[in-house]
Amino acid sequence: MNRRDFIINSIVMIGGLPFLEYIKMVLASEKSLNSNVGEKKMKVLLINGSCHKDGTTFTALKEIANTLKKDNIDSEIIQLGPDAQQDCIACGYCREHDKCVFNDIANEIIEKMKTSDALIVGSPVYYAHPSGRVLSVLDRVFYAGGRFLKHKPAASVAVARRAGTTATIDVLNKYFTINQMPVVSSTYWNMVFGANAQDAKEDKEGLQTMRNLAHNMANVLKIIGEAKNMNFEEVIEKGAKTNFVR
Ligand SMILES: Cc1cc2nc3c(=O)[nH]c(=O)nc-3n(C[C@H](O)[C@H](O)[C@H](O)COP(=O)(O)O)c2cc1C
Image 1: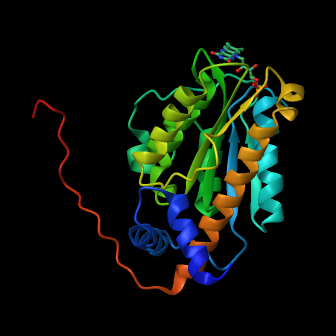
Image 2: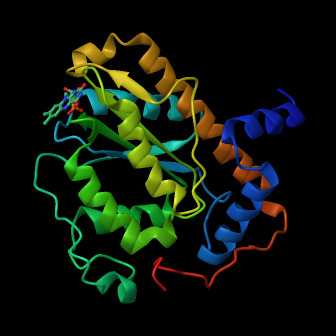
């Protein structure tokens, strides 16, 4: 594929967001956060929002990680595991400290996102929504560490025995779209079906969707690397914040 086709393909892939605006955002963000994009191998952090270490969600995320590796992108899967996860208690500590008052996996994820270039969140469907544990962790990661994630490409993945995947993906994508993170897509909505890992391995289209998501994510990261010498300023308006009543 020549350079022109590569870029045009990627415009389609990013969807909605104008390519130039996207690149401007990413580069401005790199400057403000002193990102190391372009100086090292790019890395995607994947969060497994299931209590099962090797379950359906892991099977989907592992397919993505294996494909990223083939595309020369590093990755790491963080397991939330079966332990109870702390909710946000809205104490405001993070406003002063850029980290959560509870020094647990949420702070670990914030730390890792400082040196990661993209985020993928996977969750099992529980009653047609993401697992409670992933919401508890993501509320705190984004509230306390959102500035270390902004402008970085992201994607969400839902797994289920039968139903609730699109609602789950919608909820997860909302973390990204309030935080200036372009959402990377695939050839189908990012879902894998199965009551367990064994089922998931038989969902051929689901796993293909995971591989295509990984390819698209790798391409977006390569574009960011390619564009790193372009000179853009961040143009973001700030100031207006209303609570409807005032
Ligand atoms: C509390 C609970 C609620 C669930 N709700 C749904 C549901 O709404 N729709 C569905 O298709 N599967 C539902 N499931 C099944 C899981 O989504 C499914 O077994 C999934 O493969 C588990 O993934 P994991 O192995 O990564 O944890 C539910 C499972 C549990 C434990």
